[in-house]
Image (cartoon, rainbow, N blue to C red; front, side, top):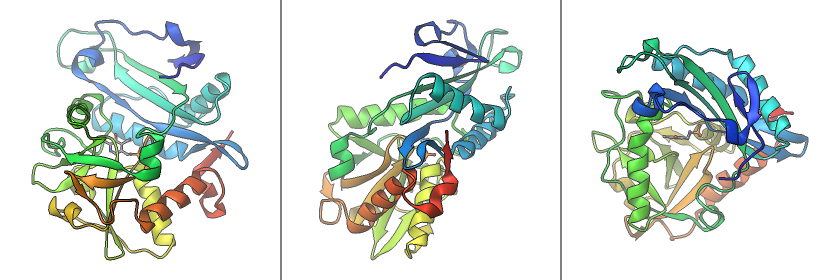
Length: 304
Ligand code: PMP
């Protein structure tokens, strides 16, 4: 991880090395936190954060879902993100806010633990590697099922839920793949370990619905809008595992992963075995949108 100079620690900018947490923090033991992942880019109009407010609104929703009382308004958090980027002299960066239960009563009920809010920003390249972005990645269906609506809140970015994602990701990498594809409890496709999934078949674009246990990705939402604006039909539909084996194209979307083609699943080539035309178009348009090169998506950029 590339270090920055300051981290925002509940109201003040502190040097990176001094941003520490107590060993007995509730969230460290039980995962009682919610977080976000946001990116800023250098755009044609200067540096800008992509869909900043949408991310902070999702942070607020995640906090509400897990019953963590948010200490700041969305507006305050938006301002803090910009102040943090400026303080660190960062333009293109990854921004990580985290709201978590810190010290308090012993035991599982977090109600007696103080709520702490932090935000960090640092430089981050392609999450799945430059080669993966350009030429596509190899993925494997995970032996782990994605957290379900019955035992977690998959639509919320709750820290504890990421033990599940981490098991899937590390298993895939240990087995020689770049990424894990997670099925849900019913055996339908949900998503990657930290990104949403799209398939293309006969020119139609498919992506699993929220009921499949996905996190409702902001990149997913942006790509759906971009593709529909470009005339493609995009369907939110339950997808069987087998649909990946016969798809023409497959790609993953996420703030960290942006739009990354998947060219192999379970050791089988997808389509031609290289990134397909709709994937490439989605990738190009998304990349232009985040860099302010497409006027119609300027609404997503918070220039600072
Ligand atoms: N699913 C999971 C589990 C994630 O952690 C992420 C990253 N936030 C995504 C999907 C993609 O969401 P977004 O496009 O909002 O980053």
